Amino acid sequence: MTTINPRGIPKGFAPALLSVLLASSAQLLMKGGIAALPPMADPMTFVPALWHVWPATLAVATGLFFYVASMLSWYFALKSLPLSIAYPLISLSYVIVWLAAIALPTFPDTFSLGKAGAMAMILAGIYLVCGKRKGG
Amino acid sequence: MIDILAVNILTCAGQLAQKQAASGEPKRGSRQRHVLLWLGISLLCLGSAMLLWLSVLQRVPVGVAYPMLSLNFILVTLAARWFWHETITTRQWLGIALIVLGVIFVGRGA
Image 1 (spheres, each protein chain N blue to C red):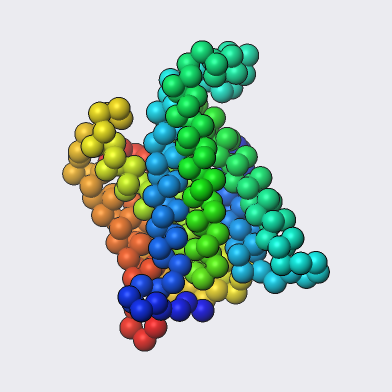
Image 2 (image 1 turned 120 degrees about the horizontal axis):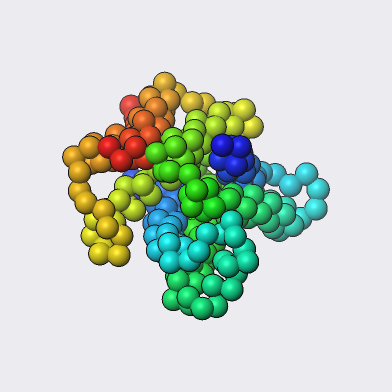
């Protein structure tokens, strides 16, 4: 089912990775935006706030756009990858978001050995699911 | 709790619908219609899942929400086996277990 392109990367992984990258950026934009807005559970204050706190609204809107782009890219990934191989790649976004949170001042998150260990587990898991195996 | 479960089911359904759009064979009608229909369904599922998830995150601590969401990696893998007859190797299940544990630790703020 999976075909190999000349560079040795199975077809479908490139759009899958692009999709995860877009979804992670979307998550960061929405996280940053939504944090500046009142709780959604209270629409009477949430909806009017969308007009007043517009940089937050813009961040959320860009995030939504990235999400749609990510879905489109995911569609192309699923054209050539089995769902059970592609879906676990989504966990890569935890690692990307964590790295971004350390690098960006907007999302205060400090490096901890425990968290790095958790990220290593996720990466090892992805390797086991998607990595090269003997005999196909 | 029940709303996190709804997020799980909606996400899983959205993934299945998207796979159906990408790889499924149209039973009747054109290929284009098939793709648009299933992409539409998946957009609906994933969109509502995301909105629900955002509201969950405003109320539920990530220490509880993340482990619940990580069940999705198991759910989608099982669904891929049932609906798409994909073979899941022991190595894959081991990988899924590591991912789920990793996500739980991330949520717990390890």
